[in-house]
Picture 1 (tube, rainbow, N blue to C red):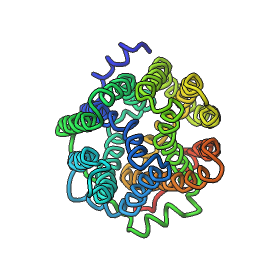
Picture 2: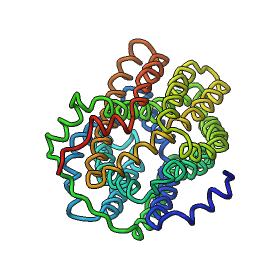
Picture 3: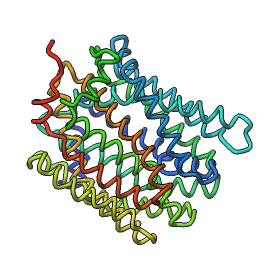
Picture 4: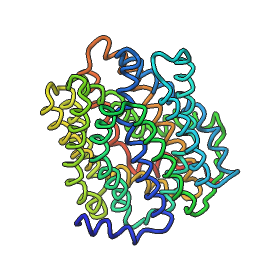
Length: 403
């Protein structure tokens, strides 16, 4: 499918999905300023301690993991799009914390603690409502195409943002970058006003939610999302620092290489969403899973900028074959749950962040004792568990309790 035709299909989306995608596109512009360089900012502020970065984001996931079953009880009191609007407030506080965070501020540790909670609360009122609404609004006959649509939008935005961000940092410093991120996040709340009202009632109890996450009966489906959390945290928190160190602290180099990798990926992504509507999603997922796992090893073995580029392009390409069917299957399962779409989404988020917590612990130990290459090897091994996601397995083993 051509680029123009794919974007023309934006008009064929439901109103709810159209505004949800518009929101995500704008929010990703704002959040994109922080994603790559925010991790590097914390790394430099901590005195170049990787373990501090991992602990910071790991604690965010711990708080989110523990509070999520309680936060889900808010669904009965207000519509989901309003909770996403509330998340904007926590996002802005989070970005304001970054703005004031510097080594000369005597309140530095108080700000760090505040940042952890602001990020956790932002996730608490944003991600499950977003996933539930997306599962509700997406067309069941074109899930692969429509799920990949937002990935395409994010990727197109991602081509420009790293280069622009590196220019802003070198010219004006991080403070201006955080202000631009805040403006993007604030504007992204506007499309949410037009999203149809949806309301859910989370029926699982607090302890029951944890029992379901750790229940042996549900081990395969939860392990798949656990692995997704593990490998995504590796890409978000370790890979940017790895690039930064290999390129010897050159912000322009980090931005340019990252943008070039994303640009090549965009050119390859357009056909895959279409393919997942025609091919068996689970077979495509398993093929992509093996190719993607190998990509972590290639990344860990990179020693030059050229290696980073080649490994990044390969990994992003294989990620297309993994991520598109993986996400399409996730929203297919969620939508089929109907009344229990919010319960499924909460358990999925809990498993994801359990994986992120585990990544933080494993990476700190492995990085300290064996080196960074073995962190990527661990990522390759764990990411293979993503191939366990199966609609048939879910229907057989993880169907929620009957009403």
